[in-house]
Length: 239
Image (cartoon, rainbow, N blue to C red; front, side):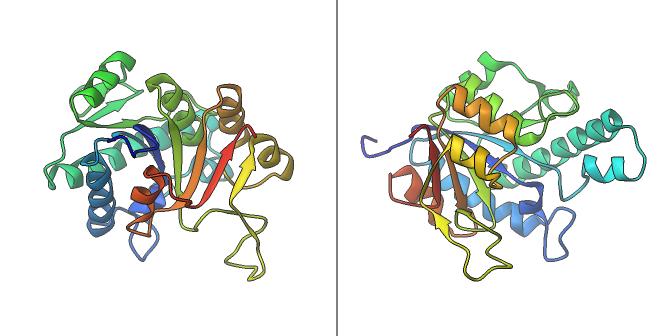
């Protein structure tokens, strides 16, 4: 489709996007809502890869606050991302979408090992690829995993799905006068310490000139509009 602005995307979802009203665990209805949005853009002819966090099940920082070894706590978080990946796979498959889960931590009975060329081939065949297990290394967030995988698969844009409609100068849920940005540079984000993604992920995108789009996935039309080039959320680029 010539009118598409982006033909291959990496969608970064938070673990909380799968949580129900209680704020934790995996809610089947929330997973289905995400699956329907992904199905919609896949049917537009867009190659889709997904990285999902684990905040609905486990946070490595919470483990370290309890006195756990940081690496151990982070590995537990990586395992939790695979659980979320399988839940999202199930929701997508229930809608007739072909899916493959690849994990940076090998667990061959439930997921393929991450192999870059195989992931690209899956997308070329029309499959959605979900990357679990983060980068496979402790001390790196799923934001960084998303930036890394986006670069590896040649994504046109990294889409960060949030619960607000873009990046603000302060928390819009606490400050009714918060100002939303339509566009930012990577340097703006780093200098202002804006909560887009962690600094490692931002720097990786900056070094490789990968655009980041921050948008609200709760809006059922936002992802489609973004892919058609309509102004949605906040776009982070070099200039």
